[in-house]
Amino acid sequence: MTSLRNKAVKGIAILGVGKGLGRLISFANTLILARILSPEDYGLMAMAMVVSGFVGFFNEIGLGSAIIQRKETSSAQLTGAFYIAMFTSVILYVITYFSAPFAATFYDNAQIEPILQVLSLAFILGAIKTVPDALLVKEMKFKYISGIEFFSILLVCIVTLAFALAGYKTWSLVYGFLVGECFKTLAIMWLSQWRPSAGGSIKEALDLMKFGLTVTYSRLTWYLYTNASTLILGRIAGGAQTGIYGMAATIATLPTSHITSLIIQVASPLFSRLQEDLKSLNNALMKLSAGISLISFPVLIGMMLTADELVPILLGEQWLAAAIPLKLLCVRGLFKSIDPLLTQALISIGKANITAKYTTFCAVCIPSTILFGAYTDGINGAALGLALLSPFLLIILLSLTKKHFGLPIKQYLSQFITPITGCIVMSVVLLLTDYLLSMNLNLHIATVLAIKVLLGVMTYVLWIVYVKKDGIVLLKTVLKDLGLSDSKLDRWPFNRVEV
Image 1 (cartoon, rainbow, N blue to C red):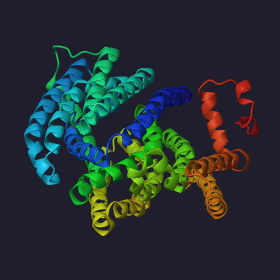
Image 2 (image 1 turned 135 degrees about the vertical axis):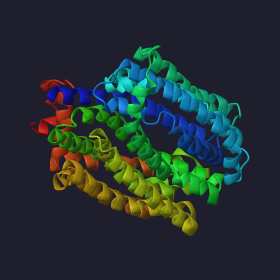
Image 3 (image 1 turned 90 degrees about the vertical axis):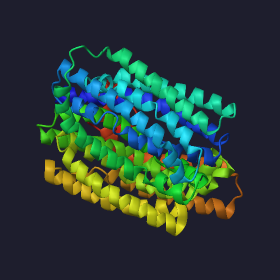
Image 4 (image 1 turned 60 degrees about the horizontal axis):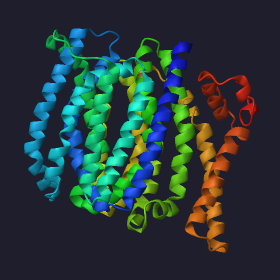
């Protein structure tokens, strides 16, 4: 168990470095593009991607997840899965290509049609990498995965920026996305060294589909409620407002999309190997959740409290309307940063049918909330509705995990005491600072942001180092697992605690 935990922790570190650098480059590129492209350009891409992404969930029919979850898979089974994925992708491409005019009619925007027809080429690329990608994850080859992720992001940024500067507007985002998908497919096929054989068995692969279809359904409903805002706002508010909301969501999910996604990528094979040892699974789940919250909570609260300065500085004056939805979506992000681990644990122990029921419930509640909020107060109303709904959904998910694998709820919630109390103290300091700066000084907005960020970071760090030390204990444990020597950890702030 210890070696498996160490391998998982090292996997998180390797993925974190690759994805972290990639995300920083991507975020910097987004800030540049925000000053070249308009909110409507982003809105058009978002509306087309919702349709493309929805259809794309049928692409591999959950075969990748089934391969990861199964302890053993035969060569014939893997090749059969590849054939099924390829056949499905071609059918989906044809359906999407000829259905694109209907999507354009729904959004009342003719530009959606050609964008969607080109984006749907990604279905075929996704099908090609289904099996080799799953094998890389199952074998925990995180160095390969990290490298592919980094270079694909770098390539997307270069291509997107080049086309944007050349005046291609929304199409710069389309071409960048496709180039990135093409690179990932080629790199995964090359590094995995897996190739389909002549002796593939469709019949054996269909056995994987029994599990895969349930996972696909869960992910499909998850995708629907996750992207319901784009679908509904695109119809009600139009491309520009959808683009503004989408940009706010992009910034609000930046900490969680990076930290949570890389931990989920490692947790998937880890949880699968622990599916028969529920005590160890619960311990791993709680430690990973604590690690996520320790970083994502203060970042999200910090962004919420500095949104008025953050938006105009990072994005420019044309994005000012993103400030209010950004604040509200940061509140939602607190819950969304931790709940994917709970659903992943359910899937890993073979309870994909339970996540299917949960995501079905979400697929009803979330779009209804967004629709009501959008009609009431546009993008601000939609964001407020999501912020208010999120804690109730987490309560339901926690009750399911307690029932099906005995997660100790009180112990689980206790993992968040340190980051929550640290965020409360940090919030008091920032709100007081904001009040004093607005009353007594006429500082430039960039200076105000710098002061607030500096004070926020200092307050939170000092809290977990000198007051609630369990956070720094967790961090020290992780670094020891990664192989750092005691001599290197015998420095501030780690010399304040004992592991």
